[in-house]
Image (cartoon, rainbow, N blue to C red):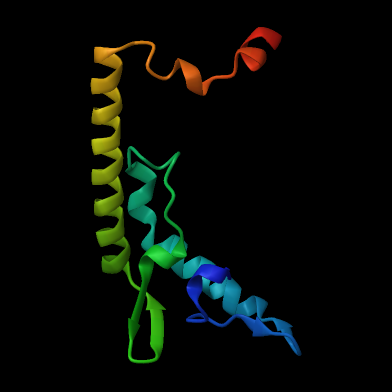
Length: 109
């Protein structure tokens, strides 16, 4: 599916091409274990993908709801800490991030 899987989930090869049935099964399984995401405050900017749910025992890898939940808890905690830090910086200096916005872009609008 992507280079990040490190070959743990094989979805085809150069001779046969993609195994679309297997890809479809992975997507459906991921959607099934991701139902909690529909009510998550981070859902619109979430960076987790199916690899966040990947659990491997010996040479067998599969998508696991608890594994995804652990990744989700860690991500939400990190994003919340980042937002708190951002808020603290802005409260100290409202211009602190001004250098990150190009004047050229701002003036063109």
